Length: 338
Image 1: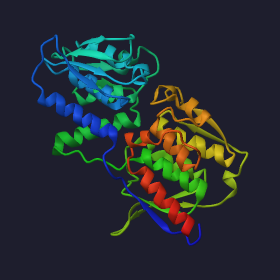
Image 2 (image 1 turned 90 degrees about the vertical axis):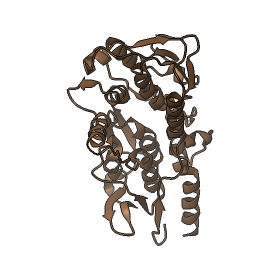
Image 3 (image 1 turned 90 degrees about the horizontal axis):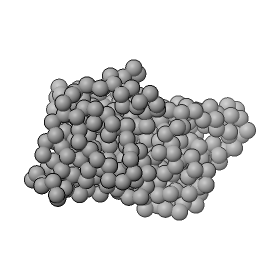
């Protein structure tokens, strides 16, 4: 990109998932206790975060009667591990469809126990989502873990911060930054991602280390006019086409679409580890990325667009990043005119 102009990208607008969870909580807080014959009905669409967090929240609210449901894809996303854990703690939760999957009917009650282990949650299998643990932590359940995944550690820290100061600062999102790393790797130039912090507890902060292998240099800045990370496309022999890049996505599954499509477009063979949870996301992300189809998955859609590949659904992007389309258009225009 001629002249290497510095583009600035920041968060804007409220993502659909955040709005949906906010509205659901508002409904629950403002609705008086219901009779058993008329539960509160909440449609959580395909928001896995809302389903997991509200399942735990509603289970421990005495007198609450609620049905948590979603769209067709949500009915394919497992929640059995969390439900089993809550039942062990004394919760009253019923499946209204397939065992282990939403929709759920929850009769809130005082939970009898306040402690559980990850092994009791998983049944000696893979933890399908770290949010199952976070959901329990957020309602005051002590969860014993051998090793905390990054987002479990972040939940613990945010709870401590809130208990000490009654405030809970929200960091800028490293997961969304992945698509700008992808854009830089494939199209070049220089870009500022505002207010991202190197000390973040987010697991997806490792995107900087991953894309260092794909030709994107990360420089942290903390100046009056510029705070965040500056991305620069660099050249070198370590990311030549034909080589193999080995990445473990166990702690960062949301980075897979951006990394996989970057490697595909650069002719680099991606050897993956820790991808067991990818089929359980908003789509089967292994299939979606391979077919270049979104299946209404916001992260696959943004990864396709950052690579300037055809995208069959852009509306789903508002799930997590409503400003992405307008920011991408601005950057493309500046790229063309530079």
